[in-house]
Image (cartoon, rainbow, N blue to C red; front, side):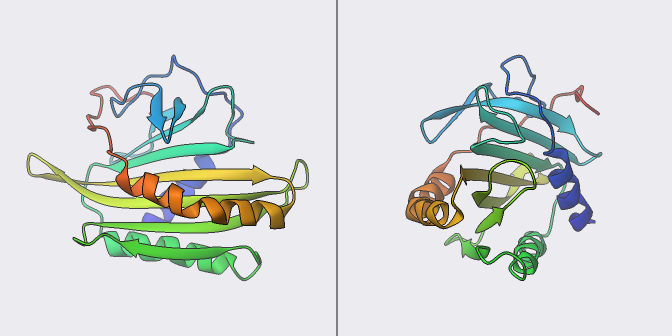
Length: 199
């Protein structure tokens, strides 16, 4: 079931829409959101299933086809087995390592064991457009509100286009800062809107 959800999240990211201020947040977040000194604008806000609510944010005037940075919040209004979710994400990157020489994945657990962070590098050489290196950080967080257990996957992606070796080196130098930013980021309070748009 979770693999199908991850696949749905990947497919949903293929769109040419531009970031905008008019989009309404299904999770009741402010728009734009500030992250690491950059304003991110809501690009998609949809209820994917009875239990999954997803939002994506990118810098203004960018689009999801050739973004440089992307924030994603995938909120499940039910309990998810965290270690299973983490393992499946790691395995998906490990499978990619067989054909992508730049692919590499790491896992970090919080001291209290309540959160995991999976970060990884991948490369793409599309038939049209520039090749790029992409660095991703996935933060897995179990939540509880009034006795109701829920689960959040917050992710951040950064791309550098052009020569893959140079891009890989540049992203590797930024890794420590980007990891710290994700780990220290205070997730906004989540309140799912009564009437979910995009269902």
